[in-house]
Image (tube, rainbow over all chains, first blue to last red; front, top):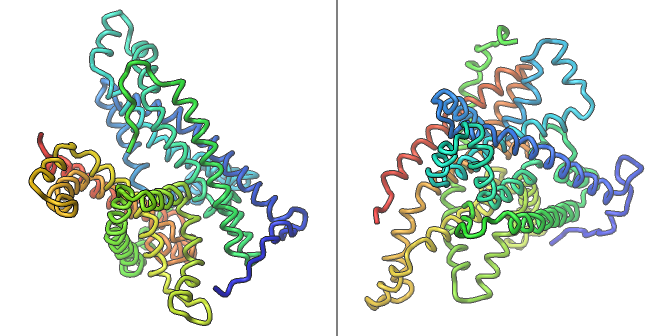
Length: 246
Length: 230
Protein backbone atom coordinates (compact mmCIF):
# COMPACT_ATOMS: atom_id res chain seq x y z
CA UNK A 1 0.00 0.00 0.00
CA UNK A 2 1.29 3.43 -0.93
CA UNK A 3 0.40 5.16 2.29
CA UNK A 4 2.72 7.13 4.54
CA UNK A 5 2.19 6.06 8.10
CA UNK A 6 3.02 8.68 10.70
CA UNK A 7 1.95 7.68 14.16
CA UNK A 8 3.68 10.62 15.80
CA UNK A 9 1.00 12.85 14.26
CA UNK A 10 -0.96 12.53 17.49
CA UNK A 11 1.58 14.62 19.37
CA UNK A 12 1.73 17.38 16.79
CA UNK A 13 -0.31 20.53 17.39
CA UNK A 14 -3.70 20.52 15.70
CA UNK A 15 -5.08 23.38 13.66
CA UNK A 16 -6.37 25.24 16.71
CA UNK A 17 -2.74 25.80 17.64
CA UNK A 18 -2.97 25.01 21.34
CA UNK A 19 -3.84 21.33 21.60
CA UNK A 20 -2.24 18.28 20.10
CA UNK A 21 -4.33 16.04 17.86
CA UNK A 22 -4.49 13.50 20.69
CA UNK A 23 -6.05 16.06 23.02
CA UNK A 24 -8.67 17.04 20.44
CA UNK A 25 -9.58 13.36 20.03
CA UNK A 26 -9.91 12.92 23.79
CA UNK A 27 -12.08 16.04 23.94
CA UNK A 28 -14.17 14.43 21.23
CA UNK A 29 -14.57 11.31 23.33
CA UNK A 30 -15.60 13.56 26.22
CA UNK A 31 -18.34 15.20 24.13
CA UNK A 32 -19.48 11.77 22.99
CA UNK A 33 -19.87 10.60 26.58
CA UNK A 34 -21.52 13.82 27.74
CA UNK A 35 -24.03 13.68 24.89
CA UNK A 36 -24.72 10.00 25.46
CA UNK A 37 -25.32 10.41 29.20
CA UNK A 38 -27.51 13.49 28.89
CA UNK A 39 -29.50 11.99 26.03
CA UNK A 40 -29.95 8.71 27.82
CA UNK A 41 -31.25 10.47 30.92
CA UNK A 42 -34.00 11.94 28.74
CA UNK A 43 -34.54 8.61 26.99
CA UNK A 44 -34.90 6.72 30.25
CA UNK A 45 -37.38 9.11 31.86
CA UNK A 46 -39.43 10.00 28.77
CA UNK A 47 -39.25 6.40 27.55
CA UNK A 48 -40.64 5.12 30.86
CA UNK A 49 -43.58 7.50 30.70
CA UNK A 50 -44.37 6.55 27.11
CA UNK A 51 -43.81 2.85 27.80
CA UNK A 52 -46.28 2.96 30.69
CA UNK A 53 -48.71 4.91 28.52
CA UNK A 54 -48.49 2.14 25.91
CA UNK A 55 -49.96 -0.29 28.45
CA UNK A 56 -52.49 2.12 29.96
CA UNK A 57 -56.17 1.09 30.14
CA UNK A 58 -57.33 4.27 28.34
CA UNK A 59 -57.44 3.79 24.57
CA UNK A 60 -56.58 7.43 23.74
CA UNK A 61 -53.46 7.33 25.92
CA UNK A 62 -52.32 4.18 24.15
CA UNK A 63 -53.02 5.71 20.73
CA UNK A 64 -51.10 8.88 21.54
CA UNK A 65 -48.06 7.03 22.82
CA UNK A 66 -48.16 4.64 19.85
CA UNK A 67 -48.04 7.66 17.53
CA UNK A 68 -45.00 9.03 19.38
CA UNK A 69 -43.17 5.71 19.07
CA UNK A 70 -44.09 5.09 15.43
CA UNK A 71 -43.10 8.56 14.26
CA UNK A 72 -39.74 8.57 16.03
CA UNK A 73 -38.87 5.04 15.00
CA UNK A 74 -39.76 5.41 11.33
CA UNK A 75 -37.84 8.59 10.53
CA UNK A 76 -34.05 8.23 10.16
CA UNK A 77 -32.07 9.73 13.03
CA UNK A 78 -30.16 12.07 10.73
CA UNK A 79 -33.41 13.53 9.36
CA UNK A 80 -34.66 14.03 12.92
CA UNK A 81 -31.39 15.78 13.73
CA UNK A 82 -31.97 18.23 10.83
CA UNK A 83 -35.56 18.78 11.89
CA UNK A 84 -34.52 19.73 15.43
CA UNK A 85 -31.59 21.84 14.31
CA UNK A 86 -32.76 23.59 11.13
CA UNK A 87 -36.55 23.37 11.13
CA UNK A 88 -37.57 23.81 14.77
CA UNK A 89 -36.22 27.40 15.11
CA UNK A 90 -38.23 28.34 11.99
CA UNK A 91 -41.44 26.98 13.46
CA UNK A 92 -41.08 28.81 16.77
CA UNK A 93 -42.00 32.47 17.32
CA UNK A 94 -39.23 34.73 16.00
CA UNK A 95 -37.54 35.74 19.27
CA UNK A 96 -37.52 32.20 20.59
CA UNK A 97 -36.13 30.87 17.29
CA UNK A 98 -33.35 33.44 17.23
CA UNK A 99 -32.49 32.75 20.85
CA UNK A 100 -32.30 29.04 20.05
CA UNK A 101 -30.02 29.63 17.06
CA UNK A 102 -27.66 31.85 19.03
CA UNK A 103 -27.41 29.55 22.02
CA UNK A 104 -23.76 28.69 22.74
CA UNK A 105 -23.23 24.96 22.14
CA UNK A 106 -26.56 24.81 20.32
CA UNK A 107 -25.36 21.67 18.52
CA UNK A 108 -24.84 19.92 21.83
CA UNK A 109 -28.29 20.74 23.20
CA UNK A 110 -29.94 19.85 19.90
CA UNK A 111 -28.10 16.54 19.74
CA UNK A 112 -29.07 15.73 23.33
CA UNK A 113 -32.75 16.49 22.81
CA UNK A 114 -32.89 14.73 19.45
CA UNK A 115 -31.08 11.60 20.61
CA UNK A 116 -33.05 11.68 23.86
CA UNK A 117 -36.38 11.60 22.03
CA UNK A 118 -35.19 9.05 19.47
CA UNK A 119 -34.04 6.65 22.14
CA UNK A 120 -37.06 7.43 24.32
CA UNK A 121 -39.20 5.86 21.60
CA UNK A 122 -37.03 2.76 21.66
CA UNK A 123 -36.87 2.69 25.48
CA UNK A 124 -40.66 2.89 25.52
CA UNK A 125 -40.77 -0.36 23.57
CA UNK A 126 -38.32 -1.93 26.02
CA UNK A 127 -40.34 -0.81 29.06
CA UNK A 128 -43.56 -1.97 27.40
CA UNK A 129 -42.04 -5.38 26.67
CA UNK A 130 -40.98 -5.64 30.30
CA UNK A 131 -44.44 -4.71 31.56
CA UNK A 132 -46.15 -7.11 29.18
CA UNK A 133 -43.83 -9.97 30.12
CA UNK A 134 -45.26 -9.89 33.65
CA UNK A 135 -48.08 -12.32 34.36
CA UNK A 136 -51.49 -10.59 34.34
CA UNK A 137 -51.97 -11.73 37.93
CA UNK A 138 -49.48 -9.11 39.14
CA UNK A 139 -51.68 -6.22 38.05
CA UNK A 140 -54.77 -7.92 39.45
CA UNK A 141 -53.03 -8.67 42.74
CA UNK A 142 -52.03 -5.01 43.06
CA UNK A 143 -55.60 -3.92 42.51
CA UNK A 144 -56.94 -6.57 44.87
CA UNK A 145 -54.73 -5.01 47.56
CA UNK A 146 -56.59 -1.76 47.00
CA UNK A 147 -53.80 0.08 45.17
CA UNK A 148 -54.96 2.52 42.53
CA UNK A 149 -53.59 2.38 39.00
CA UNK A 150 -50.62 4.69 39.62
CA UNK A 151 -49.69 2.81 42.79
CA UNK A 152 -49.95 -0.55 41.01
CA UNK A 153 -47.41 0.66 38.44
CA UNK A 154 -45.22 2.35 41.05
CA UNK A 155 -45.03 -0.46 43.60
CA UNK A 156 -45.83 -3.67 41.72
CA UNK A 157 -45.32 -3.58 37.98
CA UNK A 158 -42.44 -1.16 37.29
CA UNK A 159 -39.98 -2.47 39.91
CA UNK A 160 -40.24 -5.92 38.34
CA UNK A 161 -40.30 -4.70 34.74
CA UNK A 162 -37.16 -2.59 35.12
CA UNK A 163 -35.20 -5.42 36.65
CA UNK A 164 -36.22 -7.78 33.87
CA UNK A 165 -35.19 -5.44 31.04
CA UNK A 166 -31.79 -4.30 32.35
CA UNK A 167 -29.89 -6.24 29.62
CA UNK A 168 -32.01 -4.52 26.98
CA UNK A 169 -31.27 -1.15 28.61
CA UNK A 170 -27.56 -1.95 28.30
CA UNK A 171 -27.81 -2.46 24.57
CA UNK A 172 -29.94 0.69 24.22
CA UNK A 173 -27.27 2.69 26.03
CA UNK A 174 -24.56 1.24 23.80
CA UNK A 175 -26.49 2.16 20.69
CA UNK A 176 -27.15 5.63 22.13
CA UNK A 177 -23.40 6.13 22.57
CA UNK A 178 -22.79 5.06 18.98
CA UNK A 179 -25.60 7.22 17.64
CA UNK A 180 -24.02 10.39 19.07
CA UNK A 181 -21.77 10.21 16.00
CA UNK A 182 -24.70 11.25 13.82
CA UNK A 183 -24.51 14.67 15.50
CA UNK A 184 -21.35 15.42 13.53
CA UNK A 185 -23.70 16.28 10.64
CA UNK A 186 -24.94 19.32 12.61
CA UNK A 187 -21.40 20.22 13.64
CA UNK A 188 -20.98 18.67 17.07
CA UNK A 189 -17.30 17.89 17.58
CA UNK A 190 -17.76 14.47 19.13
CA UNK A 191 -15.36 11.58 18.64
CA UNK A 192 -16.10 10.74 15.00
CA UNK A 193 -16.28 14.44 14.18
CA UNK A 194 -12.91 15.18 15.69
CA UNK A 195 -11.34 12.19 13.95
CA UNK A 196 -12.83 13.44 10.69
CA UNK A 197 -11.42 16.93 11.35
CA UNK A 198 -8.03 15.45 12.15
CA UNK A 199 -8.11 13.46 8.90
CA UNK A 200 -9.02 16.55 6.88
CA UNK A 201 -6.33 18.71 8.42
CA UNK A 202 -3.45 16.27 8.70
CA UNK A 203 -4.23 13.84 5.83
CA UNK A 204 -3.29 10.99 8.19
CA UNK A 205 -6.54 9.18 7.41
CA UNK A 206 -5.94 5.80 8.95
CA UNK A 207 -4.19 6.99 12.11
CA UNK A 208 -7.13 9.28 12.88
CA UNK A 209 -9.76 6.60 12.33
CA UNK A 210 -7.72 3.93 14.14
CA UNK A 211 -7.54 6.16 17.19
CA UNK A 212 -11.28 6.82 17.06
CA UNK A 213 -11.93 3.09 16.67
CA UNK A 214 -9.78 2.29 19.69
CA UNK A 215 -11.53 4.93 21.77
CA UNK A 216 -14.97 3.64 20.77
CA UNK A 217 -13.96 0.09 21.68
CA UNK A 218 -12.68 1.30 25.04
CA UNK A 219 -15.94 3.19 25.70
CA UNK A 220 -17.92 0.07 24.77
CA UNK A 221 -15.91 -2.14 27.08
CA UNK A 222 -16.24 0.27 30.01
CA UNK A 223 -19.99 0.52 29.52
CA UNK A 224 -20.38 -3.25 29.18
CA UNK A 225 -18.36 -3.95 32.34
CA UNK A 226 -20.25 -1.33 34.32
CA UNK A 227 -23.59 -2.62 33.13
CA UNK A 228 -22.69 -6.26 33.88
CA UNK A 229 -22.41 -5.22 37.53
CA UNK A 230 -25.80 -3.53 37.37
CA UNK A 231 -27.25 -6.62 35.69
CA UNK A 232 -25.94 -8.88 38.45
CA UNK A 233 -27.41 -6.59 41.11
CA UNK A 234 -30.71 -6.28 39.31
CA UNK A 235 -31.37 -9.90 38.49
CA UNK A 236 -34.59 -11.12 40.12
CA UNK A 237 -33.76 -14.24 42.15
CA UNK A 238 -35.81 -17.18 40.97
CA UNK A 239 -37.40 -15.37 38.04
CA UNK A 240 -35.99 -17.61 35.30
CA UNK A 241 -33.08 -16.37 33.20
CA UNK A 242 -33.66 -12.85 31.88
CA UNK A 243 -34.12 -12.92 28.11
CA UNK A 244 -31.50 -11.03 26.18
CA UNK A 245 -32.99 -8.60 23.68
CA UNK A 246 -32.27 -9.65 20.12
CA UNK B 1 -44.15 29.86 10.64
CA UNK B 2 -46.31 27.34 8.83
CA UNK B 3 -48.24 29.89 6.73
CA UNK B 4 -45.01 30.41 4.79
CA UNK B 5 -44.99 26.76 3.78
CA UNK B 6 -44.23 26.75 0.05
CA UNK B 7 -45.45 23.48 -1.43
CA UNK B 8 -44.40 24.55 -4.92
CA UNK B 9 -40.73 24.22 -3.98
CA UNK B 10 -41.26 20.58 -3.11
CA UNK B 11 -43.32 19.89 -6.25
CA UNK B 12 -40.68 21.41 -8.50
CA UNK B 13 -37.99 19.28 -6.92
CA UNK B 14 -39.94 16.01 -7.05
CA UNK B 15 -38.41 14.55 -10.25
CA UNK B 16 -34.88 15.19 -8.99
CA UNK B 17 -35.62 13.91 -5.49
CA UNK B 18 -37.08 10.63 -6.67
CA UNK B 19 -35.32 9.90 -9.96
CA UNK B 20 -31.86 10.69 -8.59
CA UNK B 21 -32.12 10.58 -4.81
CA UNK B 22 -34.64 7.86 -4.06
CA UNK B 23 -33.34 5.69 -6.91
CA UNK B 24 -29.89 5.76 -5.27
CA UNK B 25 -31.31 5.03 -1.82
CA UNK B 26 -33.43 2.13 -3.00
CA UNK B 27 -30.79 0.46 -5.18
CA UNK B 28 -28.27 0.83 -2.37
CA UNK B 29 -30.74 -0.72 0.07
CA UNK B 30 -31.49 -3.60 -2.29
CA UNK B 31 -27.87 -4.40 -3.14
CA UNK B 32 -26.70 -4.10 0.46
CA UNK B 33 -29.56 -6.27 1.76
CA UNK B 34 -28.94 -9.10 -0.68
CA UNK B 35 -25.16 -9.05 -0.34
CA UNK B 36 -25.47 -8.48 3.41
CA UNK B 37 -27.68 -11.56 3.84
CA UNK B 38 -25.29 -13.66 1.75
CA UNK B 39 -22.20 -12.55 3.69
CA UNK B 40 -24.16 -12.65 6.95
CA UNK B 41 -25.12 -16.29 6.34
CA UNK B 42 -21.47 -17.09 5.73
CA UNK B 43 -20.49 -15.33 8.97
CA UNK B 44 -23.20 -17.16 10.91
CA UNK B 45 -21.99 -20.51 9.54
CA UNK B 46 -18.48 -19.60 10.62
CA UNK B 47 -19.62 -18.59 14.09
CA UNK B 48 -21.44 -21.89 14.51
CA UNK B 49 -18.68 -23.95 12.95
CA UNK B 50 -16.79 -26.64 14.84
CA UNK B 51 -13.47 -25.08 13.89
CA UNK B 52 -12.49 -22.78 16.72
CA UNK B 53 -10.34 -20.46 14.58
CA UNK B 54 -13.19 -19.78 12.13
CA UNK B 55 -15.65 -19.16 14.95
CA UNK B 56 -13.32 -16.73 16.72
CA UNK B 57 -12.50 -14.85 13.52
CA UNK B 58 -16.17 -14.36 12.66
CA UNK B 59 -17.08 -13.42 16.24
CA UNK B 60 -14.24 -10.90 16.38
CA UNK B 61 -15.29 -9.29 13.11
CA UNK B 62 -18.97 -9.14 14.07
CA UNK B 63 -18.34 -7.77 17.55
CA UNK B 64 -15.83 -5.20 16.29
CA UNK B 65 -18.14 -3.74 13.67
CA UNK B 66 -21.16 -3.86 15.98
CA UNK B 67 -19.40 -1.75 18.56
CA UNK B 68 -18.51 1.01 16.10
CA UNK B 69 -20.88 3.73 14.95
CA UNK B 70 -21.97 3.39 11.32
CA UNK B 71 -20.75 6.92 10.53
CA UNK B 72 -17.21 5.98 11.50
CA UNK B 73 -17.43 2.74 9.49
CA UNK B 74 -18.62 4.73 6.47
CA UNK B 75 -15.56 6.98 6.73
CA UNK B 76 -13.26 3.97 7.22
CA UNK B 77 -14.39 2.16 4.10
CA UNK B 78 -14.71 5.30 2.02
CA UNK B 79 -10.96 5.85 2.45
CA UNK B 80 -9.93 2.22 2.74
CA UNK B 81 -11.65 0.81 -0.36
CA UNK B 82 -9.43 2.70 -2.87
CA UNK B 83 -6.33 1.29 -1.16
CA UNK B 84 -7.82 -2.21 -1.03
CA UNK B 85 -8.71 -1.97 -4.73
CA UNK B 86 -5.15 -0.85 -5.46
CA UNK B 87 -3.80 -3.82 -3.55
CA UNK B 88 -6.22 -6.25 -5.20
CA UNK B 89 -5.57 -5.01 -8.74
CA UNK B 90 -1.88 -4.34 -8.29
CA UNK B 91 -2.32 -0.74 -9.43
CA UNK B 92 0.40 1.83 -8.81
CA UNK B 93 -1.85 4.28 -6.95
CA UNK B 94 -5.13 4.12 -5.00
CA UNK B 95 -8.01 3.39 -7.39
CA UNK B 96 -10.90 5.81 -7.63
CA UNK B 97 -14.03 3.91 -6.65
CA UNK B 98 -17.51 5.05 -7.60
CA UNK B 99 -19.29 6.41 -4.47
CA UNK B 100 -22.21 4.09 -5.14
CA UNK B 101 -20.09 0.94 -5.06
CA UNK B 102 -18.10 2.23 -2.14
CA UNK B 103 -21.40 2.63 -0.24
CA UNK B 104 -22.59 -0.82 -1.32
CA UNK B 105 -19.38 -2.38 0.02
CA UNK B 106 -19.60 -0.43 3.28
CA UNK B 107 -23.22 -1.27 3.98
CA UNK B 108 -22.78 -4.90 2.95
CA UNK B 109 -19.86 -5.42 5.31
CA UNK B 110 -21.57 -3.51 8.13
CA UNK B 111 -25.09 -4.89 7.89
CA UNK B 112 -23.79 -8.44 7.39
CA UNK B 113 -22.87 -8.39 11.09
CA UNK B 114 -26.46 -7.65 12.07
CA UNK B 115 -27.84 -10.21 9.60
CA UNK B 116 -25.33 -12.72 10.97
CA UNK B 117 -26.73 -12.35 14.48
CA UNK B 118 -30.30 -12.72 13.21
CA UNK B 119 -29.42 -15.86 11.27
CA UNK B 120 -27.43 -17.33 14.14
CA UNK B 121 -30.32 -16.76 16.54
CA UNK B 122 -32.70 -18.28 14.01
CA UNK B 123 -30.60 -21.41 13.64
CA UNK B 124 -30.08 -21.76 17.38
CA UNK B 125 -33.76 -21.30 18.14
CA UNK B 126 -34.65 -24.54 16.31
CA UNK B 127 -35.29 -27.48 18.61
CA UNK B 128 -32.21 -29.67 18.85
CA UNK B 129 -34.33 -32.69 17.88
CA UNK B 130 -34.59 -31.38 14.30
CA UNK B 131 -30.86 -31.72 13.76
CA UNK B 132 -30.72 -35.06 15.57
CA UNK B 133 -33.63 -36.38 13.50
CA UNK B 134 -31.93 -35.40 10.26
CA UNK B 135 -28.77 -37.16 11.38
CA UNK B 136 -30.78 -40.23 12.34
CA UNK B 137 -32.11 -40.23 8.76
CA UNK B 138 -28.51 -40.55 7.59
CA UNK B 139 -28.01 -36.98 6.30
CA UNK B 140 -24.55 -35.50 6.52
CA UNK B 141 -23.84 -32.02 7.88
CA UNK B 142 -24.42 -30.08 4.66
CA UNK B 143 -27.61 -31.93 3.85
CA UNK B 144 -29.23 -31.46 7.23
CA UNK B 145 -28.29 -27.76 7.09
CA UNK B 146 -29.72 -27.36 3.60
CA UNK B 147 -32.88 -29.48 3.85
CA UNK B 148 -33.84 -29.35 7.53
CA UNK B 149 -32.30 -26.50 9.48
CA UNK B 150 -32.09 -23.57 7.06
CA UNK B 151 -35.61 -23.82 5.54
CA UNK B 152 -37.20 -23.60 8.99
CA UNK B 153 -34.73 -21.10 10.38
CA UNK B 154 -35.07 -18.79 7.37
CA UNK B 155 -38.83 -18.89 7.68
CA UNK B 156 -38.63 -17.99 11.36
CA UNK B 157 -36.29 -15.07 10.80
CA UNK B 158 -37.95 -13.61 7.69
CA UNK B 159 -39.84 -10.89 9.63
CA UNK B 160 -36.70 -9.91 11.57
CA UNK B 161 -34.77 -9.68 8.31
CA UNK B 162 -37.40 -7.39 6.85
CA UNK B 163 -37.18 -5.23 9.99
CA UNK B 164 -33.41 -5.09 9.60
CA UNK B 165 -33.87 -4.07 5.96
CA UNK B 166 -36.06 -1.18 7.11
CA UNK B 167 -33.30 -0.13 9.50
CA UNK B 168 -30.82 -0.43 6.63
CA UNK B 169 -33.08 1.74 4.47
CA UNK B 170 -33.06 4.43 7.16
CA UNK B 171 -29.33 4.03 7.75
CA UNK B 172 -28.50 4.70 4.11
CA UNK B 173 -29.35 8.34 4.83
CA UNK B 174 -26.00 8.51 6.65
CA UNK B 175 -24.10 8.53 3.34
CA UNK B 176 -24.99 12.22 3.57
CA UNK B 177 -21.72 12.65 5.52
CA UNK B 178 -19.84 11.86 2.28
CA UNK B 179 -21.97 14.40 0.34
CA UNK B 180 -23.45 11.60 -1.78
CA UNK B 181 -26.78 12.37 -3.46
CA UNK B 182 -29.07 9.83 -1.88
CA UNK B 183 -32.65 10.83 -1.07
CA UNK B 184 -31.63 12.91 1.94
CA UNK B 185 -28.60 14.29 0.12
CA UNK B 186 -30.82 15.39 -2.79
CA UNK B 187 -33.26 17.00 -0.36
CA UNK B 188 -30.47 18.82 1.42
CA UNK B 189 -29.05 20.11 -1.86
CA UNK B 190 -32.39 21.53 -2.98
CA UNK B 191 -33.01 22.89 0.52
CA UNK B 192 -29.75 24.80 0.47
CA UNK B 193 -30.07 25.93 -3.16
CA UNK B 194 -33.55 27.36 -2.66
CA UNK B 195 -33.09 28.36 0.97
CA UNK B 196 -36.11 26.23 1.86
CA UNK B 197 -34.92 24.05 4.74
CA UNK B 198 -38.33 23.86 6.41
CA UNK B 199 -40.30 22.46 3.47
CA UNK B 200 -37.62 20.12 2.23
CA UNK B 201 -36.67 18.47 5.51
CA UNK B 202 -40.29 18.02 6.59
CA UNK B 203 -41.00 16.45 3.20
CA UNK B 204 -37.99 14.12 3.55
CA UNK B 205 -39.14 13.05 7.02
CA UNK B 206 -42.62 12.39 5.66
CA UNK B 207 -41.37 10.22 2.80
CA UNK B 208 -39.09 8.15 5.04
CA UNK B 209 -41.90 7.84 7.58
CA UNK B 210 -44.50 6.59 5.11
CA UNK B 211 -42.17 4.06 3.47
CA UNK B 212 -40.87 2.69 6.78
CA UNK B 213 -44.32 2.56 8.34
CA UNK B 214 -45.79 0.63 5.41
CA UNK B 215 -42.85 -1.75 5.38
CA UNK B 216 -43.03 -2.40 9.12
CA UNK B 217 -46.73 -3.13 8.83
CA UNK B 218 -45.89 -5.60 6.07
CA UNK B 219 -43.28 -7.15 8.38
CA UNK B 220 -45.89 -7.59 11.11
CA UNK B 221 -48.36 -9.24 8.72
CA UNK B 222 -45.59 -11.47 7.44
CA UNK B 223 -44.79 -12.47 11.01
CA UNK B 224 -48.34 -13.70 11.52
CA UNK B 225 -48.38 -15.59 8.23
CA UNK B 226 -45.06 -17.39 8.38
CA UNK B 227 -45.10 -18.34 12.06
CA UNK B 228 -44.61 -22.10 12.35
CA UNK B 229 -47.25 -23.54 14.64
CA UNK B 230 -45.80 -26.11 16.99
